[in-house]
Image (cartoon, rainbow, N blue to C red):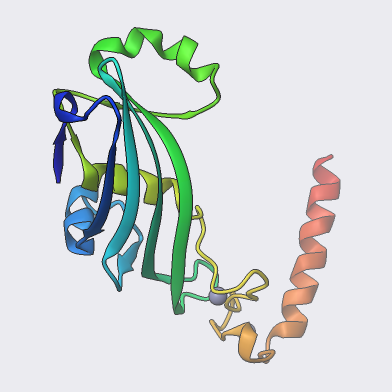
Length: 174
Ligand SMILES: [Zn+2]
Ligand SMILES: [Zn+2]
């Protein structure tokens, strides 16, 4: 949904959105390493400040991602509250002043804001750099590829020896 900044009333604009995950994926140009299971629902409050727009809102969706340690796919609920200041490209020179307000800042060009772009930017911020199926995921054995969450593999004892060698190597370097 495109919003003409000019059309945002002085009293602000409240939006309840349900965006199709496919549209957001298409915008991301393949940069998202998860896929949407449900639509992205969001509640946005937009307030105009000159040509810039302050947005406070929340976002809710469910995604499927794969664990960066064990490669297993898992489902992850994403819920986030956010506030961000959308600065019109024409006012980018005021960046320093705005940063001092300690607020997330995004820039936009032209007269419109695209709600899918807003949601994509917030999701990209919200998702961890490394997806984990659980905090203490043990990952895969680097030798045989066994999932160590399911138990130890035959080469576990050798892996321990390797770890000791690795420490010895570090010591020599110092
Ligand atoms: Zn895992
Ligand atoms: Zn192994």
